[in-house]
Amino acid sequence: MRILSYVARSAVLLVVAWLLFNAYGAGQVMGADPRSPRAAAQPTGAPAHLIIRRNPNLGFNVIARLWIDGQPAASIGYGHSFDGFLAPGHHVLAVLATPSPRWPVPWQLPLNVQSGQTYYFTAVSDASGSLILDGRFGFPPRVQ
Image 1: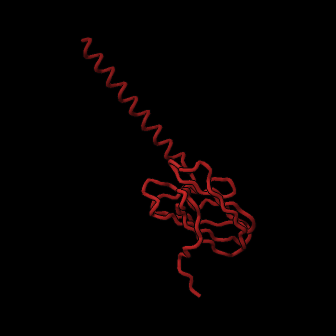
Image 2: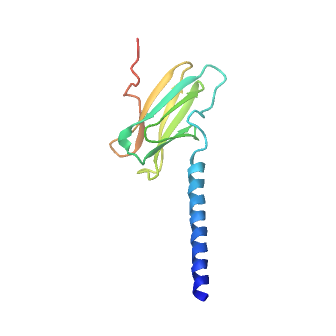
């Protein structure tokens, strides 16, 4: 009888530990970035359009975290992009690769946003291994 209660106690402890681990994991996923990619501040005037694409060469498990003016704006995973709006004026865009950034300080880009403009960037890794926003790739092709 004593062996049976030991086995039952062990099984209950194992189930409780499993439930706690799953609850912690779900909390990490849900709390990582509760806003949608379009959650950038919607200005009242004529907004500027901001599109940031994530380079697939960063790897499947790397997430590009985007901040706009010091506030978290999006987590851009493999195969995804950010599509949002910015109020005209001065803004600072910052990106950091997670979960294991090579450099703990996010790379920052000051940007003077003009009303009605569209800004395209690609989150890429530079020669030092840090994540940057590069505007040279010019996607999508512009029709003139």
